[in-house]
Length: 339
Image 1 (cartoon, one colour):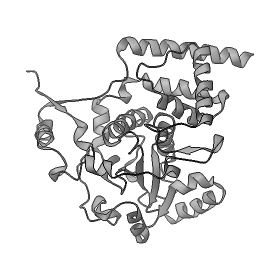
Image 2 (spheres, rainbow, N blue to C red):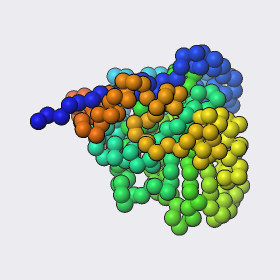
Image 3 (cartoon, helix red, strand yellow):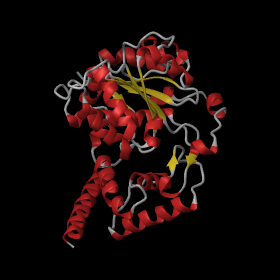
Image 4 (cartoon, rainbow, N blue to C red):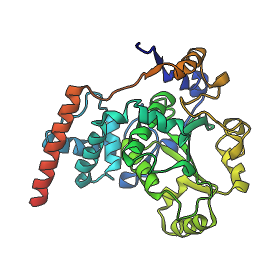
């Protein structure tokens, strides 16, 4: 007997329009500093400066030179993000683009596979609330991170799929284009700290979700991690460190400078009960976390196969084209290296 199929539409995660309308960004938030030192948080529906346009043109010349066909949904915003990921240097653009197109060519990065859903049900990563500028908050519980339970590939697939849902449904072009990340270390010592898994998450976000991070909170550190962090902070780039804040439990009130207490779980000093069910992602502004339509769908999840609405980046034909381009790009790179 064929199972009933239930479609989940993640549009219930979208912020209320009146809250979006109230958002006004300082020009220094949208973009600050100049030329190769530039830092940008808002990418869409805003003007780009002369230097950015010059570098975007350079990037497109490299695309043309290597005869790369960009995906049909490619935008100027995508080009600019690749320029930033390449640190405004021509020599970096091909590799950055190669990595990004390779990521786009993997269907499991965009689909609700059984293993992706199993990963998300664990609560390793989940969303909860929004900050004062309606940026979604993503929480990662490092105590649950285990590369023996889920492979490196699954981490990339599941995180990519989840971040894509949040980006599509919680962001609003020109208004909300960033998220706040809470990484709960659960006092893990250095010997048990999942450095490799964090490296995987960071690498996935840096190129494929470039410019999305607004703030990272590292919470509940062990004494060994705190000591190591002080040493890293002393030599790290000031702009990077500005985005990262390490807090002990007795300092959690500082989170409320950015996130209201009614948007935070009790475990982080907020007023909302800790979440116990992590998938599908909830909107805490809706009673029960979901619309009535979604609640019915969630109730059916135990007995029905879930087909989740998604944006698959490419058809099978497009995927083959991408793989073909990747092979050509690799050959070209090897030829250049030989020169």
